[in-house]
Amino acid sequence: MSKFKMSNGSEGMLRGQAPDAFQKVDPSMPKRSAHDTEFERMAVKPQKTHANSTGFTSQVAELATSGIMEQAITDRLNQTMAEGMEDGYKARMDEESMRPKEVTDAEIDAKEDGGKCDDDDLEVLRARRRQQMKDAHDKRLKYQGLGHGSYDEIAEEEFLKTVTASPRCVVHFYHKMFEKCKVMDMHLGKCAKKFFGTRFVKLDAEKAPFFVEKLMIKTLPCAVVFNDGVAIGRQLGFEGLGGEEFETVQLAWRIKEWTGIEEDFGPEDDIQWN
Image (cartoon, rainbow, N blue to C red):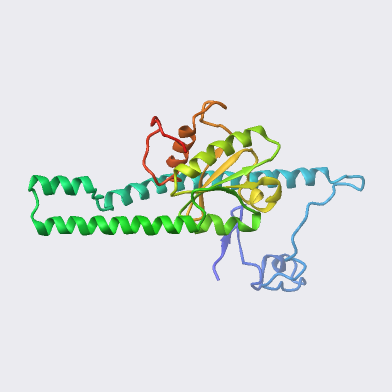
């Protein structure tokens, strides 16, 4: 077994080797075991410096450690959310670039009237159009079954099933006495009817202590955006919306930037809300 250098520059044997440094000083000392005793393995707690000590120093040390850990967890969550936003945006761009171009009836009619395609090519376009319409119909039926198109309240026990069942989901953590939560409800209700590709729900924060703690929700209203069950963004209050008199499209655009909305639109679009 190799030797190690001590802080004073001298060399000594590893504990448990014979003769060790203690036995060299006093040969009568018993040889130490290579393994710690059960007592030596016990965690050492800070001791009081005197009989009248209140243990305040130890308590402060523990609080400081807890604060550091909590900040580290918060920083890691923020980093994960930022990475999720970036990864989600890249994934959406890749998906859109690989998605076959949608064929419209008007495009088929134009090619047929202009004589730019022979019958075989036209039939290929018609077949693609039929498949696209079927896929869109099947997706809509699936979304309807999951509750898309409505803005419902869920219970805490329904939370995990709700955010994992749909590819995109927005959960509004609210408090029934907060006026700003009522404003957020109004806008999210409009979004639910307009953007069918996203499941919009709300959850009473007072009745969901477990997920409020796990998601570290401290500010209400808070709308958390999920992609396939993973939280990738959150709208805290009216942050970034320019005050309480914001337009619904502004909130929708922020949700879309977190890849929380499937449909295409722009932040300046004049959207007709149902």
